[in-house]
Amino acid sequence: MLSSYEPSLPGSLHELDSHLEVLRGKHADLVRQLEELGEEIRVAETKRARMYNGNAFISRLPPELLSHIFLICQDSFSSFQIKAASVCHSWRELATGTPLLWANVEIRLEHTSRMASKLHKIESYLNRSGPSTLFAARIHVQKNLDFSAFLKLIASHISRCHLLSITSSPETKAWELLREHLESLHAPKLEYLSLQVRWSSASVYESKWSITPLIFKGGAPLLRLLQLTGIASSLRPPVSKAITTLHLHGVFMLLTVSDYRAILSAVPGLINLSLHGLELLEGGQLGGSLDLPQLRSVRCRKFKNSTALLLDALPLNQLEALVLCEVDDLPSFDFPNVKALSVFECGFGVSEIGNLVLAFPSVESLTIGSSSLLYMALGIEGDPVWWPKLRRIDVRDLEPEDVGSVSRLVKARQRTNHPLENVYFDGSSRRRAKSILAELQSLTRIGHLDDYLEAWPAGHGSIADRIHLADY
Image (cartoon, rainbow, N blue to C red; front, side, top):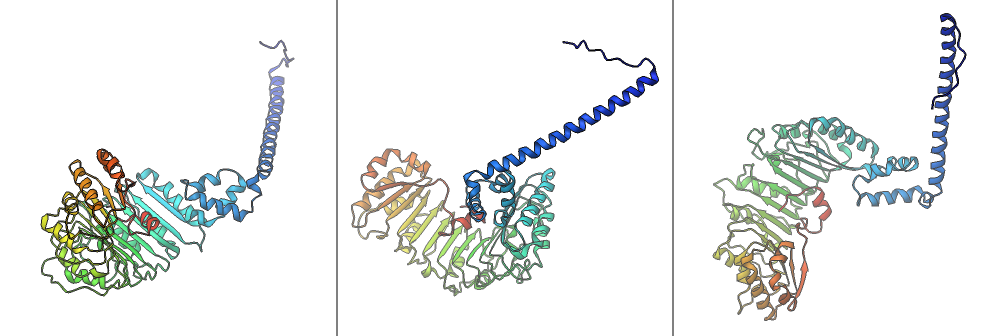
């Protein structure tokens, strides 16, 4: 409804202009007063919110205790530090003032448009983690992107980096970038190093194992877990007796028998060794086992024609755990002390299965993934009972045609003096073995396996997981 108020206005143009100036001045004063009033309201509301939050029970906790709670929550909630810093002023101050909340940075580079913001994120994390806090950095380059700025930033803080993991999709210059930015560094606190670069036909890299270090030439005296995968396999850092876990991916690396033995000789403190796709150049000869007194766990994948040469260098009588994956031949070696054996997708024939059964007299735990002949061999009744110490079998990726063999194996063992105590199935295997589960449960304990494989090496779950050791 329109107002009936009609202000008295001057009659002349000059007087009307003067009147408008006065009105505009009054309007500006009122707008300014409203803005000032709005600011007072905002300040009062902020003060009230802080007072209200201050009366909450959690706000009465000592900052040290609340900071510790933040650190616990960080393990369970993604980007918790960002969320905590957004709750209120006091939480933001506490979160940004807790260096350990920012000591674990993970970046995924997927598009050029996000590169600047991702670089700012990692820079903020490194600054907030403080100059005296060790940090872990994980960079995943998922496209053919130039990530040199990130390497340069990490390099500037390398003196306090204890874990560095870089995974790159086919990036034509990734090998060169890694060598350029990591070559001369001294990493006094670095314990875990993982470099994974996928191959492409346009990739530029060297395939030969270097006699001298190509990266971290200044030294990495605490380095104890090293993984080199893809075309990064030849990016050799300094190696020493401090290294206890080594993963080598040899598909794109040319190694002689002498190179292979020299690599192992340089890491006498080795406990866990993972070899993927290594195929030694022709002309090598068996030279006997090397002095690796601590070696206990070995993982082998995709061995073709070099199995004998690769295993010959290892003190097999010391091993307690062995993983065989996509291994087509198994020479007549003895593994007298292996207690945990895993066999995945190995193309063993009858003779190799015979060697396998004879070579592992102390097996207590067996994991099988797609190995029909092994189920059949272990299900044969009579004397002697193969692997009399076997108490647990983990069944993965069970094929429908192997269901009957698993049933016969369990029944045969239960009729001896060496029965199985536990049989575990992953999700798909359990569904396929549905018809025999009730009967098996009457004979032994049946358990569930997660559909993902446990981290390797055993006992290093969180470390192995975070450094992205090659999956099996």
